[in-house]
Length: 420
Image (cartoon, rainbow, N blue to C red; front, side):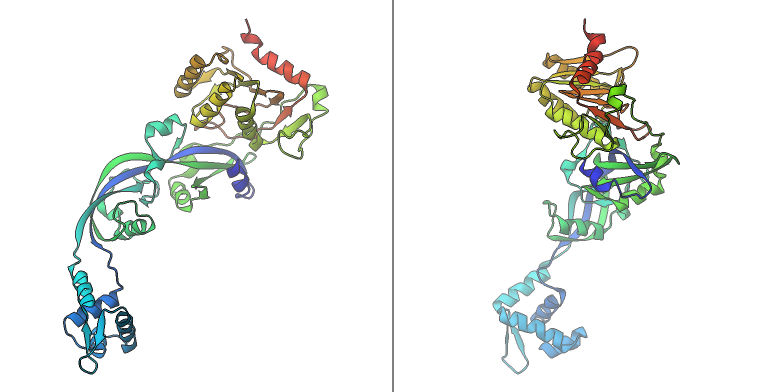
């Protein structure tokens, strides 16, 4: 819901019709680099100390040797004089290193390039090094089980050493030292080898114009639009590559005459506010709010009826909330005609564990209905399959009915075919 509020107006002339979970292909690469430890002093300071050790002369001689202004060298000399690294004398204009200064110069001379090995994430959609946390990367099987849209890679070729530049590696090391050598400066990438293939789960926003059939997407990473991912996906074909389409809007289901006469749309206030109208029209984005409210607040009963259930909706978050309702001793009935294998396995597990949880599989299809406690949501919205690749995106209009007699009737009618 936060993404809906933040990004719904980002594409003028287009409506936000859906938010999909998507997975960016990432390869964790074993990288061998040539590096050196980051030196503790700026380069000019290093040159001054090392030239003094070599008895080049005073500040004037050092400035002439380096081809720099005398003032720059004098400033460095003054800094190290204050820090006790050098003294003036014994002759006029002569500078001499102290024991501390000689030790510092020796340490600077001893720094030599070394070979280091560490693992780094490589984003195959943007074809670039990426600063992704290992805990945020999942396997392909997990991404598929969560119903993610698998985004394409920019190339199918093997990742090579030239694809990973020293500048890119240094940028990541400086931003976040994860024990991979944040105190080193990478000079060259010698070799790379794929270590494991993973996916980064992101949000994919779908915008559309239902009259013109126009559809656009936007990728959100860590709560913000990712221009680099959007550009990369666009070069690969964007929505055509993913097969997204926009279908005509679905008007609200007509209610019995006495309820239709009472229907208010749009209605002020929160969706389930105690002062809300008894028959309240709802927009597309409010359907998911209603579903989450049912999963989080139902105290007595919950009925969800829909034609199909997919793992893109019946995911780990959905299942966790559903089990919380069951632990709270809420009666839960799910009615659906078709179900994905992963979702079915998880729902069967809960059904075996909780006697108050019933799964119903009508042969002739199921109507889309949501009832929880005293709320009846009337809509053609596909409650358990509104996310997932291969489905057209459309604008659904619905109605929340809180009239007790009508809500009771809808609940009874929804379960009547299964009550023996």
